[in-house]
Image 1 (cartoon, one colour):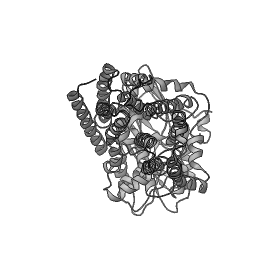
Image 2: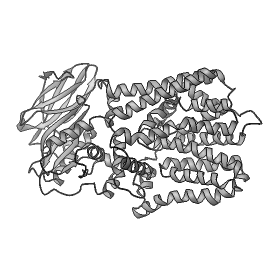
Image 3: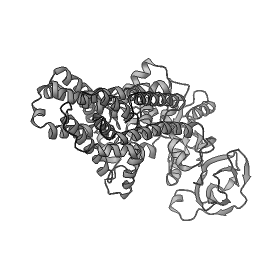
Image 4: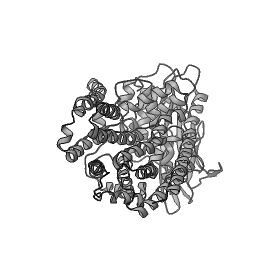
Length: 588
């Protein structure tokens, strides 16, 4: 392992570098969609919420009440939780090993898991799951030795808060109970203060969740354990295992693996505590490794086992003389990966143009919100109601829009269902199901809709809002995101260009559904805003495709196009009353 001086320098060098990059990201990065929605939920204090328990919205409500409205200040409590992990790990391992050197190694180990730095920068639940896991393990181990009522109280307070962070902590709590029963056996059940103080406090933490879910027909349980999971075998989960090696880095992952080796008997080590941490870590990891074959495959779950890796790294640190060479290179590679990951994420967000679909998907939920708010403010007529398409647009507009007294609602939308936000929007009275009496401004993120969802969404919205007239568009990052703006109560139903696109071997091809009367033409606009007409257009009827079953074939047609280029393309549809920008299609 690194020598004392080198280890000291490595720790402070890594910590300061990570903190600087986290602050830079927290200050300059717009809110991610989930962050914005948790902030919006904080405007409506409730016992719990339909897709998450209450801790994150409660914390946001507190920070928003005492701190200025800026993404950095919203994220500050999460950063503080992340920055406290080295000291928390230090005290936990010092308690287990009675070794200052092992405790210092533990503090250093908290800095070599790349995703922890990013999770700690975002105002979401993940960093608190890691924080409360380590804190609860610390207090439980101390309680098993002291039996003091104060330690039982601290553990109960930790668990009371933690169960309100996310349903994933419920799994951790259950696994911890099983692991403690296996390792501590009868001594666990003889801890009177555990059952007299900690257990009632933990159950009290569930009370708010229980009250809310009883009142509203258990939406949290229904979404987290039902709606978001197919509960059908999916072989694609095999990528999870490769992903774990990548997100931890190979040497850090291997260090976690070798920490399962039975620890040597040492008089000054709490071997039961180490066995407990090992068993808890592997049970929690196996939960996601196995259930992932049947559960949610629409959202990223590669970061869910992070508490497992941190617990195992603390076990490895507890024996400061073991695996010294592996530890040295795990710290070097993992720490470097942590810094490079944060730096790379900053560059992807703020320095590089979006060049691929993967790049777009990675950052799309955190770009364009201020630009969208400014455009919406420009288009809004005095006293005009603003309506958003889905929860993310509504939340971001409510955060960034000038008028803080008016809350912008959202229409029924596939995104609301996918992310479990439909019920919560209704509970906040922000799910717009009315028909406006006068012209409202509708804001639609066209790129959030799949091709099969687009026509039905616009037609349903048109029917609900008494007609839609397309008035403008907004292209974010050269078409990475496209927004369309409509006036309601228009007496007509404008459908923006609907595009099918394909790219094969340097050839972009597809079709665009447009109104016949517009006599539309297509141009390609590159990232330097240079227009190139597309001459190889062919007019096609709508045909018998199920996609067009609700479209009047007498009014619409398809324009088929081909364009040879290995660069991305973005189409502009000209004709009719205005030119309409479409999304950018990438060649990678």
